[in-house]
Amino acid sequence: MPSLSLALHQGPAGVPRTVEDGLAALDDAARAAAAEGARLLVTPELSLTGYALGDDVAGRAEAADGPSARAVAGIAAAHRIAVVYGYPELDPDSGALYNSAALVGPDGTPLAGYRKTHLYGDYERRHFTPGDRLVVQADLDGVRLGLLICYDVEFPEAVRAHALAGTELLVVPTALMRPYDVVAETLLPARAWENQLYVAYANRVGREGEFDFAGLSCLAAPDGTVPARGGREPELLTARIDSGLPHASRAQNSYLTDRRPELYTA
Image: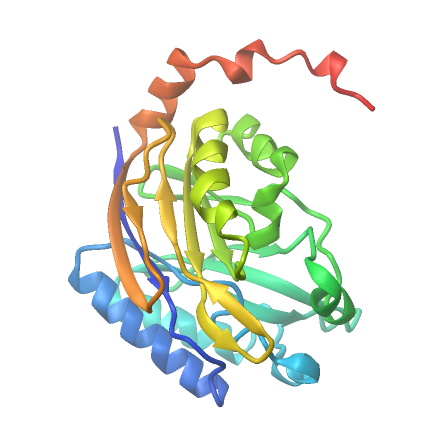
């Protein structure tokens, strides 16, 4: 069965002064992750710009194929590593702003783009439009990846939709704040167990304006274990997934086939 080595970049703390600073931090993380043998680098929510942008969200937003996207493609290709990064997306047709994440392949090819569907708190609802497509997937080294962003993963329906669609590794750029450590410590392993998939959860860390981010990035496995767990400081975590484990777990714990969806309607 295929396996995939990945890295979770927890940090850096703070809001980059410029987009160029954010790209430089991403380049450093990609270089370090590639040196560790990782094929995929996962970074936090809004990793290119920082989260606590206030009214500057619109000023830093770019189209999905904008200059920052092209720069990230160059970084990925230079280090031969796939990258998941977060950024504020401007839809040039409607003018709407989205809290988005993109997956770029190790040759720099765009593979997937996702717009956060469940917005958290007044800050996000004031600045962003919710996305309307829940299941976004791509294949990397024979592994089926899916994308969600932070608060999305706290909805069981969102993760179950990915499980039913065949996602093996659910990638979640995150900006989890204190005091909600329970999400990283308890909920994430439960989501992985009940859906028999991996969850790669890359969180911000430290204080940005009014927000205090919890760290505790992790890789949660389909068998309920946590092969990698971060602390409270910026760090780069590496781990390997085995795509055979979701299939073995689904054979042993038959939640998906034992479902009775006709009973679950409102």
